[in-house]
Length: 130
Image (cartoon, one colour):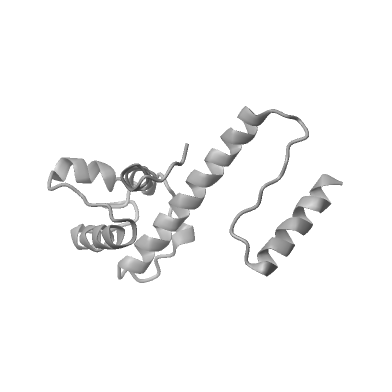
């Protein structure tokens, strides 16, 4: 069946180090499949941003998997501070060649959550998540 085929294909692709998989559609509903792919791409990119955050800051016990994409990064959310924001900003600049403006209000909005930060980085690095 299709489930066995797909899980076997994923296992083989993982073993050979493939980064991408492409499956056909029996339904032919490409709009629906596209919407699923977009959601997966966004989630994958947000997880990449979470990994970058954890690697950039020195917060004991902070794990990427424990960060909710819509949780505030600062204050009572994840608990990051302004020094952490500088470290994350430097890491984003290095990895994605994205620069932040000096406007503090704009930067606060970008750094509000993982989701907002990922959207800003994607937009400014030319990464299409839609």
